Image (tube, rainbow, N blue to C red; front, side, top):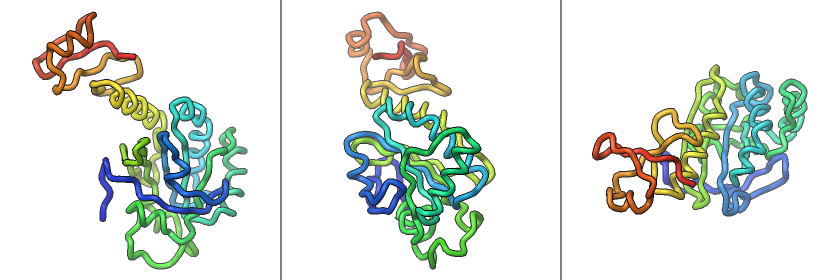
Length: 219
């Protein structure tokens, strides 16, 4: 069964570089980012893991944990982490899942359920779809899914921007427009009437069209 936004993120138990964990228990009552890699010691993923390691503090400020996954054993991750810190300048302090049996990759539809074997003998090319990003909300549902091609590094500044948007819009009855950045004007959602909007925003809002109303970012 394919996963969709607002589906409950599949739970799992896994071995990680921080020991064994249960995904839902590890998330607790906060947000989480799960991002996957097709193989250890791959060049694009090395840069991505290093960049995310540098951004971990920003995600932490937003009550959001980071966890990585690679279709290789945990022992390989520990060695790879040394290369990442050496070449990218940031130590990987968040857990990395060892998915030697491919169980989590299959659970999250990154590999077909009928895919045979384990990580042994597989290459990055045979794991090409294991380059996904999932954001999971405090209610354990999937809020975002993205899958990238092998040769294109992921933009984790964009993942942080989306997290800011989702946390803002979850708290207030607003949506964020194209290319929104934190602090920009936002859109009042259609379910809020003009009368309600006037009460909610006494300093006023702009009506561009009856269905398109903007206001300064709340909060």
